[in-house]
Image (tube, rainbow, N blue to C red; front, top):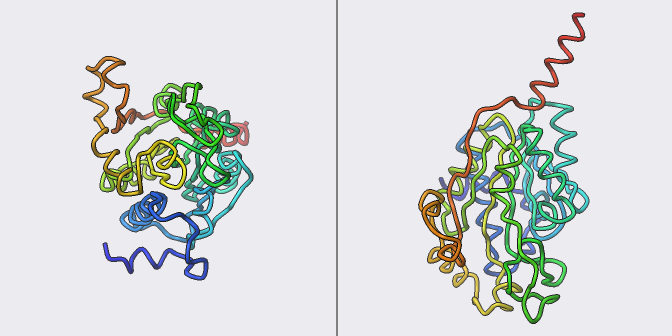
Length: 272
């Protein structure tokens, strides 16, 4: 796909963007635009909902119907939008806080309901916009501005969590695996039900610097060297997986979708 095909989906007056040099968020945004273009979606029927933080800025850059919501409530807003107009393609962009801290409860219940949304979790392992504080996704013993001697909290493993909560489609990849990223986004958008794509992305300004991983390119190399497929990971011990990023499709199932079931109730009651 040409760069021009991507540019047509951007609000050019909102550029230059505010993401730091080496940040992986631009890779995720470009992959999303390639997925939308490949699926030939009607831009007027695409809604992008985002929360707060670095990932939340994506809604301002995209020329679709967009909503920049309050912290942690992106899925709540998206649920209301989808219920109001089920024909819309609703995509939700979330960061560590929106998906695992203040918004964690919304995430597990959106998955439990299996509502037809596509949620993208930008996992940069830290709160990048507000000063580099540790988050529920900061790995154990890694450093942050609020954990200068190492994080003593154990992080959520979100992909298995969302899988167990009942989502139809669950996948994890990295900004290094850019072709897989686009493929998973396409599959998630097409899937009837709740889709969750977790993307491991780099934050060189805080996470990379505090943990001596390096610049953006160094963080992408780290993703390449430490990733292991979901199928292969099944045969490894917890110790062998200690420094690994497990990537792949965790779940792809068919099950009743929330809005479809809701509409059946309305139809049934209307005729009784």
